[in-house]
Each structure stands twice: as structure tokens, then as C-alpha cells.
Length: 477
Image (cartoon, rainbow, N blue to C red; front, side, top):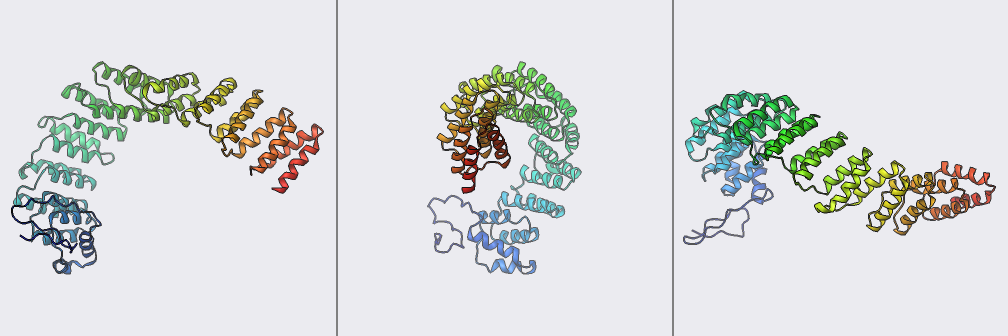
């Protein structure tokens, strides 16, 4: 045979001469010119003229090309059928091409045509598979036709495809993807479980359905049956994850912790996925007590290694609940787990110290932040300056401002205004004038309400000249 002609990109590579190695199959990109050309023909040509247009386009169909075009033809099922038939005149369709055709027909609700294609696949031989019926299950369920999906399962063995646990799980998954239909999946499971023994994936699929619907009662029933049928097995991680997540998501963290302890006693603790998801839920619910209990079981007792995101979530939660001592404990433990604090970690704790007026600790912590080059946020700077003045520590307030200036950070206007008011309250009016002039030179905006308050301080102190220096500076800017 002749070798491929590389100068014509609209023709696929042909077979090489006998005795030479067969090239690897070409994986076609949607932007391949042949794919684009055929898709344009399918989208623009009336169906009555489509066969003639395809035959005269000069493009020779090959399996990879057919599959690529079908992948892009879900919105035009009639044209896809004609293209499939036309290309089938010159090649033997792959199982994937057949399955794509089944999927296109099913997703468009053309179920009679889908079954005609399935029967054709049976006659073709060697192309029907569990994937074919998984597609049919999904199409029926997406259309709300759960009974038809189950009937499809009931007849699949007549087409030479086994009704095994993989097929059962495919159908259960398709049903559970639909809102509010997990009970239908459970009914099917009850009917089939004696004939097709379930595996851990079967229960994981049902748990995910119950989790989505928030049905903890049915989830507990399913969990009990899972233990009876498949026992305790550390490999069933996905099922345990889904079950516990159902309880946590339904605001039953105490129940989740009880089951967690039972699992722990059977060496079947869930993995990091559950821990991360559960922690996220507890943080959203602002539930620090159960989050601490969960952390102790999953990390302290069981050896899971949390990452920086988990530590930050936990520290923020503890700080929001005024549990600053616990937050410091977590901060100290981070390096032992290979998680090193970042700006978010430090700012959560710094904000908590400020909010609770713990001036001395906040001052020491601020020094640590400077040493570690993890600066406070602008809002924390403003709050810290205000708090230090309120707690009679103007030196610490000035230290925060000086740090902002030294690091060439752009402080927000709030920090500047808080500094001026704090200095004025302490009677440091010459400092107020000096800092105000510097702020104006830096383009910092002073609030009119602050200016009015400063005016009162200067007048009471009998120093209107210092105030006038500020107003003159403001007019120049």
C-alpha cells in the first residue's frame, strides 16, 4: 500500500506498506481541519442533501475522525445519524463510536432510535458492552424515566451484557444523580441485592444520594446493612466518607463523632477527604467544639496529616470563638505536620488578640509577624492602632505605623485617621501636625470628621496655629 501523503491535511494517514510497523492511532483535536470541515457540513447542510455533501467533501473517514465528529454532534442528532451511516459505508465502526451514537440519541430523548441502534450493535457483534447500557441508564434517568432505566437493566442480559455489580452500580449512580430520586435507587437495590451481591461502591453511591438529600435516617439504615453485608474493611473508604459527610452536612456532628469512634475501634477510619469536607462544614456552622473533637480523633489519635488550609480554617474558627489559647496551640503544632504559617494564619490570631484587647500579647505577636515577614492586613493595622491607644500603649501604635512606612506598604486611610485621633487624645498635638503633614504628602486622605475632631483638640489646647498648618497643607493638596 502507498504511504500517507503529508501534503494534504484533509486526508488521514493511510496504511504503510506491508512489513512496516503500523503507526499509533491518531488522537484528533476538535480544531483538526477535517473535524471542523465535517462539523460545518453537518451543521449547515439540509438533511436531504447531507449524504451528497459528505461524499463530495473529499475527506476519507477513519475511526478517530468519526469519534471526534460525533463528540461534537450532540446538538444535531439527525445529522449525527446520517454521518454515522455514511461513514459506516467505508469503515467498521469502533465500539466507542457506537456508544457515542447511543449517547447522542439517548441524550436527545430519541429512545426508539436508541434501541434500534442497540439492536444493530447486537447484530454487529463485539461492540455492545456495559458502557452502552450505562449510557442508556443515564439518558433515561436524566429524562426522569427511572422505570424505563430499570427495565433497560432487566433486559440487558438478552443482549449478552452481564447484570453484574458494575451494571447495578451504573444504574444506581444514574438514578442518584437526579434530585430526590435516591429512594427509587434504594428500591431497586432492595429488589436486586439478593441476586447481585453489592460491593462497597454500591453503598457509597447510595450514601452520596442520601447526603445530597440530607436523609440521615435512610443513611443510617443503609450503613447498618453495609456492615452486615460487606463487613468492616478499610478499603471501603469512599462509603465511610459519604456516610459521615451526610451526618455532618445535616447538622448532626455529634452523631458523626459517635460513628467515627465506632469506625476507629474497627480500624476503619475515613480519609483526608472526609476530614477536609467535614471541617469545612463545621467552620461554616461556626462549630468549634465539634471541630476540636473531630481534629483530636482524625489527627491527634489517628495520624492524619492536615495541610495549611486545614490549619488556617481551624485557627480562624477558634479565633472567631474567642479560643485564642487553642489557636496558639495549633500555631505551635503546625511545623510538626509540615505546614508553615502564612499571612492568613498570623492575621487571624492578630485580629483575635486585637478584638479581645490583649494589648501586651498583640504587641509581642506583632513583633513576631515582623520577624517572619508576614505583615498584618490594612484593616488589622487600623484596628491595632486603635486598640493600642485605647489600652494606653501609644508606643505600640506608633510602632505599627512606622512598620507600614518602613516596608513601603500603602496603609489604608483608616490606619492614618486612627493614628491622628489616638495621638490627639494623648495630647501629642505636635506629633499630630507632623504626621498629618507627612500623610498628606503621601496622598493619604484624611476624613472630614477626623479633621473636625482634631480642630476641637487643638482649640482646647490653645494651639490653633498647629491646626492651621494642617489645613493649609490640605488646601495645597
